[in-house]
Length: 545
Image 1 (cartoon, one colour):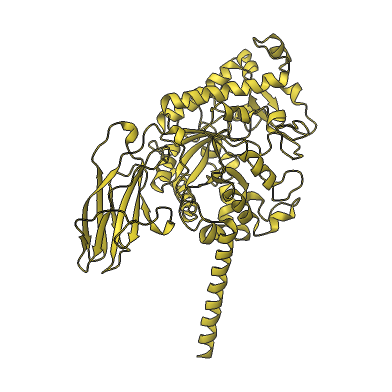
Image 2: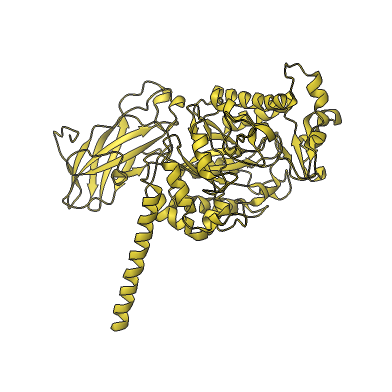
């Protein structure tokens, strides 16, 4: 008996401690926003995150991806950024791009199921879980190895003539790269994006931080590029080769942006650049107070601020992979800097999940509170719309309890994906709750649209709110959000199994479009849960004042 009492006392103490830890984390990170980007990059290159190894059966690939999404969903993530073009190849079926060796073992090999398309499956799997799917592409990396015999015959490094290869490619370090200066390359890469946008129901196209390659110690990038003749003879007005190189990248970004909006205006185009645009010592007026050894503008020739200013991209997700207080590149300094240079576009912050308890040069990553404190800074800045973690696998490994913190405190409540008003042509149509029924264990609701003036008003998903009592309360209280339907749900129906017999509830439906803009609420419906089912109250006037 005494042992049992001690056990229960210890158990009670443990639960109290865990509850206190969760509450402390939640306080530190600030109130959970109603809309907030919560995403993770899922890397396929070198099988970092998925699939676990090349050449798995289609069923094993599906199972692994489903398992990965289930864990992300448990953490209340609402978006995944999946690398579908890791290295001049494809994690999807294509007539012009070979299947990736990271997927099938040997580049261009066949999948074991003729009906299986990994990208089609992954998009549907994400949407079933109310998660956005952003197709992450590495545009310029052409081959993972210098050995071209490992490439499929359809790869342009093997299929093109020697003359065209010299125009399209250059090798640097251990990789082959597409030449950003080639107009033919830009058109080729743009066509790849176009193909994905047209054939797949992706929510976004996402480029990472690789434009011109990162400079490697002991190797001269200028020698590898060998582009001075092209610069000198080209039809342009640039006098500085660095400006010309930046313009080469600018032209691709502008072209891709135009193509996406031409075919599917609601598809978002975003960039995940290196975390430092320029250091202040190179640009006293616009640079950040950092001492980074590499910068977007000067080394990668990526003028991200121009893309934001011109509206070519819809969001930016800088990879701020340093800790708070890290002297050369302070997380807090960089969040503040990027927040002041959004030009009205969405800003999400990239966090280095892979560094948690795994950064020998920075002891701050040994602190369990580092990510909590970073999220607090993100939430405390009104110009930041959320977070993306690199990458998914560290979150699954749960170093220093980061997954536990996300589930129990930081992301304890679900959040909608941030709305992007610029992409919304019309407010989604207003729903009407047209039928209320019940069973001894549930309340059943069915809704429809009475009026739909245009295709742009068609909802992508619905939110169902339930308020205690006979009136409408606060929509921004996460306690009142009962459910969110899967994207493209065919049945506009919900069954509430949590209603308590004898209690009154008020139900309201709102619709969301592809830009995550929420429409007007439906007329509220007041329902009493009865022993046999549910009873709808008549003559309900509506909102609680």
